[in-house]
Amino acid sequence: DPPANSPLAPAAERLGEIVPWFINNALIHYLSPRGLEQYSGGGWGTRDVSQGPVEMLLSLGRFEPVRDILLRLFKQQNTDGDWPQWFMFFDRERGIRPGDSHGDIVYWPVLALAQYLLATEDAGLLDEKIPFFHPEGDQKAEQASLWQHVEWALAVMQERVISGTNLAAYGNGDWNDSLQPVQPGMRQHLCSAWTVTLNYQTLMTLAAALSRLGRNDRAAAFESAASAILDSFQSILIVDDTITGFAYFRDGSRIEYLLHPRDKETGLSYSLLPMIHAVINGMLSVQQADFHLDIIKKHLLGPDGAHLFDRPIQYHGGPQTYFQRAESTTFFGRENGLMYTHAHLRYAEALAHFGDAEGFFKALCMANPIAISDLVPPATLRQANCYYSSSDPAFADRYEAYEQYEKVKRGEAPLDGGWRVYSSGAGICVRLIIQNFLGLRWETARLVIDPVMPKALDGLRVGLQLAGKQFDITYRIEKTGWGPTGVNLNGADLPFTRAANPYRTGAAHIDMAAVRERLTGTANRITVLLG
Image 1 (cartoon, one colour):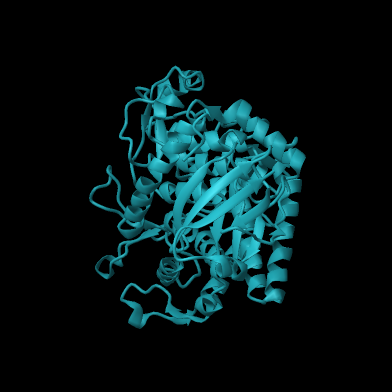
Image 2 (image 1 turned 90 degrees about the horizontal axis):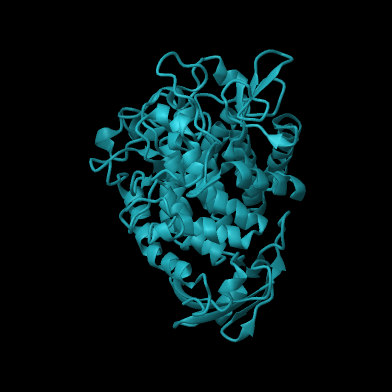
């Protein structure tokens, strides 16, 4: 129920309308991975199930299903400590799985576990005995505690680094499937700056989780390892003040920077993913974060949102040079089309963390298909009740896309909705709406309040169910739209401590015991005051 006189009221109402549909999409992805373009079903992508379902369920306060997901994930771990790129859920299909995975895959289950532990402080999960994957069934598999599974994954992470640095090696690729390396030697000598941010995030989140569980020695060790990674990130991967997409360690003394203004090989100057994830994880100073968000606004924003690169990689149609799919696939869409909605949502998350309330709200609304042409005029007609994995410019072929890409930036190219439903993005978007826009994070030990919303939504009222409780929430915004200054529950002001945020005033942490004392069986009224 947004304020009637607010110019943002229609967009806010549409966010409320899409949430049930995105929850529906995320549940489809969680229960049986498929989309409207993949009606026969598919495998669980290891990184996908570690994000969409986990983030959505945690944001809804549904912890038991997340515990189940984690147990299923760790049962799919290979005895070498890594995971397959994807796997099948049912036992009759257990042998259908790839023999390798991209270099980022090993981080995702560990990160999901750490996020669950932060929310629940469920130390008992770490002692659960579960098998590693065995093609002939669990009865023949090696058994270990879940924490031992984690230790094996950590050993893989520690082994896969660029020699002489603390930087993760690229392996068979990263999150962007279009950038799988061509030459085998690139796996050990190429570094994706984005994978380094994921490595840092995994260790820092695991450290915070173990600290909550009282395992301070291990937490300190992970923090120390993350600090060393951050030092290497700052000294090696930020060149001429700009984060490089890749650093190619060709020999002992020469580093080639790709997807960077110094890049003379690929034709690309900027890469979105490492910039936004460095902001999300607080790896940049205020000045550095502001500088990179400005780069994104100048070079990576299109009429439909944040784009992965400043222009497409050139299509070769023959021998590949650096990246397999990006250089050779004939389809111009999804990652190759550059506006991949999942990445755009992480851009929105970075804006929320930085404190750009107006930019965050606009970016969030651009992922909503309802009345999409109001925000994205070049968008073609599309189904309005489902998540779209991408925004695909309607070019005839890769040659035309490369030669006429400026039309996309100018809003002159029609933009089709990409694959529907099949993605972890719907669950991520639900989390962004609940935890970043409305600013509600329900944990076992505390309630975290950290909304980011424009001043024009002062007076916004929201009704929702969280962790089985009904809430009616009113937001009063004084100026910035972030940094709670007061929280009132059913007529009582709640005491809180302040969380750290390197870019803006941080969240309010409220002891859950104080919350539960004041909860009622009917609708609970919360008023949140923002700076």
